[in-house]
Length: 333
Image (cartoon, rainbow, N blue to C red):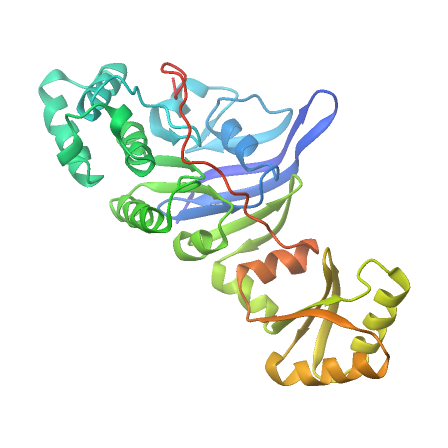
């Protein structure tokens, strides 16, 4: 399987000297769903805007389907689709009219327009609402219409920037199914997300990005297998007391069955086999040392724990409102 995207030492610096992306390298294989996972502000959207030719990079090299994005951005745009975080449909037009307008932008032959529009409306489960104004659609429906519009020209490569942010759980899972079907039909997917479960369920491979750096990459299974342990997260009663914190870590590191002890923003993370049996030993050890525990949490290997191990922080998903509205004419041309 050859690469459809190759990124080498990509850097983006905003004024005044804000480095949003810091020398990252990765590739995307043709035909896969590639996940770009990270919290808000990690550099996901900056990267996707560079790859879609919407933003100039500071340095590095990006090749899309064999085309250098600096040398021939117009050719890149012909083979990609892009659905941004902000939905770019015209609320005054019906769903059908929105898609027909996109057909005119891409010079789809007139005799093929009706069939193409009907096929996309059916694929995205919008046939019944096709002749209603898009302004009456729910957030999930508007998002699906936006994805349909990005598929008008049958792109080889589809960029989805946080496609389910702000959607309710039921609509989110339905959107996952549309993305999987799109990929089965031959489209390579580049997906940015801040949802661990979404990356785990959809991505064939993924990169985890934080503060402009790629901190881990691999398949979801391989990344979780690197943990190869349960994780016990401990918040001490005297949280913030550095002396007590270091003393607790010292006691924990001497315990059998513990593979690794790491700091994280709320306390201490302990990695070990059979975490449920470790917990009483941890409690007794810290009690003997007269170190109080305020909170203790046990989890198995997940992408949350992968992020925690590599960054020392939990990845908190920000609560956001349903997909926003972008003024017409600013969507992807």
